[in-house]
Length: 130
Image (cartoon, rainbow, N blue to C red; front, side, top):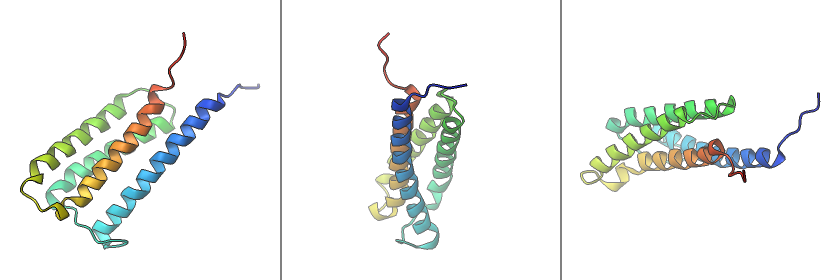
């Protein structure tokens, strides 16, 4: 059976995947810096690690849903909520912490936010002219 593919949607999915891969690569470098001190040495404050972990787990769940073809926004919403919790925690700590000690967590939060934005653009799909 010949199936008609929506090449435009496939292209948009590929573009979103490329954007998400860029942010995952950046996340990996920041986490490697926090754990092993390479390629750059950064500090991930101990009290932020649980929130960072929850936000990363939620992002992974949203990506798994998208990969399986699920366009329900439940996992994406859960990831956005986990990110909002992390951002709120960062805001509460920011005034009392040196900026250099916050860099890793802020970078991770921004990468999660940007990956979720790219994912949401594909989950919501293109506007249709009905």
